[in-house]
Image (cartoon, one colour):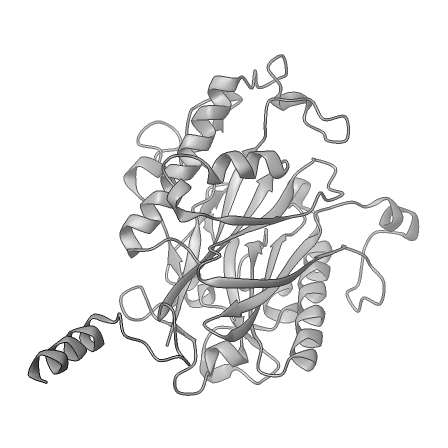
Length: 357
């Protein structure tokens, strides 16, 4: 009898023994990474990929493509090594197609993760899409949807005239629904319109509005559902797209049941950054959570602080991901610099949150 009691104690304290209700890991990593132009080397007439061809502007050869894949996988592996597990959910942007994602998840550095892929070919004029990678051992996929970027029914004051609105094309917003540990989740992955030329503030606000309205519909359809909106927002947490239209709040105490908590709002005020844009550190790479994930009942998944036991977001940066000298010292070590192949990683650092029971 003492022998069996001893074995039971070991199982309980090691975390191997779990109840039927709470089976599976008690903590999960949910994050986002802008992969900075992950293109293959093949010409696709439906994509604007001419500069990423062997004879194109970037001389995008098989060797450069292989290095890019290796670098992206290295970062994902480094996050696994730091956390002790791979992401359960990893949203990505600036990917050309399904092929580059297949090549990425099969890289030897991360192949053991067994990531599954959710991806749709979108209408973006640059030919880049968003996608979601997930661990099928931890996330039970139910459905996905590619939400088009339209202006129908918007309350945002749009500066484009009707003709320009009809011509406008950008990335769709990806929604993926499923369960983690028996709890219902929906994940949104976005890459909101660019700031190129100092434009697009109203377009990014419209993107925030699209995500928010869809998320509220999901809450009505599935009471208690937990929602994460993530992506390269091309805006900081305090900008209108995030603070007004996506209802992002700096603290959970400020939230109502109709709001989202944005852990990066306090972090940008403290000087953190996920990229450097025109000499200023910004946090365009964000994850926002709904009320149900912020205020889960006892025993349910909720977000937890992971940086200095104070901040709920993590901006992942290691020395190998950072430019070590020259004009851009301290910036993210990117693939191309001033038109020259630098062999780096991305112009963005990945970000993530942790949820636990």
